Structure formats: C-alpha cells, structure tokens
Length: 392
Ligand SMILES: Cc1cc2nc3c(=O)[nH]c(=O)nc-3n(C[C@H](O)[C@H](O)[C@H](O)COP(=O)(O)OP(=O)(O)OC[C@H]3O[C@@H](n4cnc5c(N)ncnc54)[C@H](O)[C@@H]3O)c2cc1C
Image 1: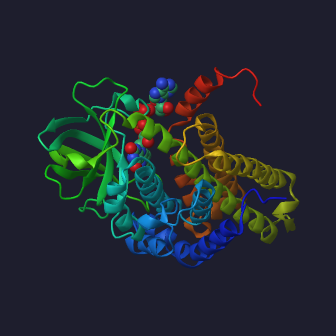
Image 2 (image 1 turned 180 degrees about the vertical axis):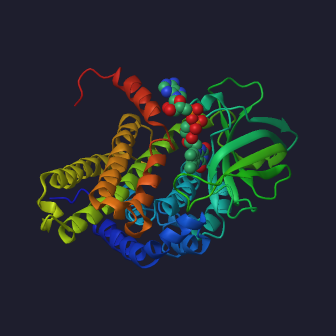
C-alpha cells in the first residue's frame, strides 16, 4: 500500500534529511530565537544548502523541483521544533519562490529565483495592509504607469521577512497593488527589491505573542519606482495568481500545525509515563488518557486530510479551494488545542520554556489568523459548498 505521508522513496529521504537537520540544528536554537525575537539567518541559509528554500522551484532555476507533498513534509518536520523559524521559511519558499515559479516569466525566474534558492536573498510576499486583511480586494496600494516603470504608493502590514534585523529590510518581495483606474477584483503583482527608490522599512513589529523567531514588519512605498519588467503577468491579472498561491500557503500552514501537534503529543506522552502522582504514572489516570488519546486521533485525522489535499494540489492549477481552506480550518485549532492539552498534562512544567509546549501553544495561535482567519475559511468553504450537491 502507498504510504500517504511518504509516497515515494524521494519523499521518505526528504523527510529523513529534514528530520535529522531539525533535531541537530533547528531544535537547539528554538528557545533562544523565540526569547530574543531573532530571525536566525545563518540557519535559514543552511536550508538553502539542503535544497529546501526552492523546494518546488524548477532545478534549472536553482530549486529542487519537488511537489506539494514534499513542501508539506518540509514544513511539518521543521515546525515540530520551531514554528517561528518555519514561518520565515514558508514566506520565502512558498509565498515568494513558489509564487514566482508558478506565475513569473522565465526572465523573472532566472533573475530572482537562484538567489532565493541559496538564501543569499531573503524574500516575502506583501498582500495585507494596515486597513485590509481578510478583505484583501479592499487593498489600497496603487500602481501607476510612468514611462518605462510603475510608481507604487501605499503601505503593507504584517509582512513576514519584511525585515532581517531591527533596522534592515528583507531583500525581495512580491507586492500586490491595484493599477489606478482598474476595478476592485483586478490586482497586479510586482517584484520589488530592497534599494528601489521610495521603498522602505516602516515599523518592525515587536512583542508578538508567538512566531517570534520570524520577523514581521510594515513596508512602505512612497513613489516607489519599479521597472516595467518587474510586473508579474498581465496588468490586473494577479488576483488569480494570489488565490492559487493561497492554496499551497494554506496547506503548508496546515503542515506546520501538524508539526506542533506531533511534538506536543510526544512531549505529553513521555511525561505521562515519567511523572507519578498518588503513587502511579499520570498515564494511568483516565482524564490524562483522554488528553493523549484524543490528541493522537485528531492529529492523525488532520494529518491524513492535509496529505490527501497536498496530493490533490497541483502547484500550477487552481482547484483545491475547498480543501485548502478545510485543512487549515481543522488543523490550526487542532494544533492549538493539542499544545494546550500538553501544557495541562505537564502542569506547572508545561507553563515554562523547558518542555517547549508553551512556545508551541503561543506559535499555534497565529495559524488561526495568518494566511486566512478561521472565519475566512468558514466563509470560503460555505461559498464553495454551495456549488456542490453530493459531496463525493
Ligand atoms: C505574524 C503574522 C505574519 C503575517 N505574515 C504575512 C505576510 O507575510 N504577508 C501578508 O500579506 N500578510 C501577512 N499576515 C497578515 C495576515 O494574513 C492577516 O493578519 C490576516 O489575513 C487577517 O487580516 P487582519 O489582521 O487585517 O484582520 P481582519 O481582516 O481585520 O479581521 C479581524 C477579524 O474580523 C473577522 N472578519 C473579517 N471579515 C470577516 C467576514 N467577512 N466575516 C466574518 N468575519 C470577518 C476576521 O476573521 C477576524 O476575526 C501576517 C499576520 C501575522 C499576525
């Protein structure tokens, strides 16, 4: 029977590679990066050496040419140790690199993807704004054609990898804007580099609840000059690109929740055997058994749904709208609740950093917000389901 989670020997080898790297290099730094709100750029560049930064990018542009199941494996494994670091990886490899691989021209891919795949450049994607998140088509950033370039004006908010330190911008971004005069549903996408006139770092967001190993920043465009060749696709044609890329984003965010859930179950399962109370191990108490057993069953259900959806998701085709929303809706709350139970099983020891579950719990909350809130998933799914009479 095919292994749903490692369908080919290549997937299995990838999982082993990422798992051993995660245990050796990612796990040991996770607590200090969280504590110091530090993006570990040296570690990030090692992901480039492993071929992970361009996991779905074609080999001729420096990537590994793998599929969405491979992307899910990488995110699940990395997030089992450090979801914050994994969020920076996701913004770079999925929101930027995969997006440009699917939607860019060969010239744009050849110019930008090799440096993204090595990690020489740290990249991200700018959709959300101070006044528009869920209502993404309400974004206010404008682009106006002027001779051989476009002029962008506006601000983007909550941009992962927007900064690489407290004062320094990230390197390259895909930025959604509306060309003046075009209707609400026709967005355009531009490649914007650090150093373009009029492009600057606004505030770097400090004091996040979780995901503190990734940076989050406001980016500002003031008469920002973007060469015409940096328009991705056609003027007004990026809305579909955005929707398509959101599908792989949601499935890989779901994979992060799987990593959080798996680690939390491992921690509470082990602890329940080691810790005694009233003369017997915690795992002999029915209430503790319920936490562990229900967590495992929910994790496996979420894992099967996520890998099923990843199998169905062709990177360059739309079509998994319903289930990419569905997996994230299910797994984000599942991951948060399992991390919460792990804290409960550990009692006071769960509430401090030593066992990692408090950090996983803090990180897990973002997955109910970023890449689409729970309410956005519910809204999208009901719209999709309205078109369906029989489910399967
Ligand atoms: C740490 C972090 C990293 C992020 N990284 C990025 C990034 O790299 N790039 C990027 O572009 N964005 C990024 N985001 C932004 C993220 O995608 C948005 O925060 C998210 O889409 C929600 O938008 P909002 O915060 O404006 O909330 P709002 O859209 O204002 O929503 C507020 C509340 O209202 C609810 N709501 C809104 N509309 C409806 C409706 N029609 N029906 C029911 N309820 C509704 C929402 O569900 C939510 O509960 C990041 C956010 C965070 C916190």
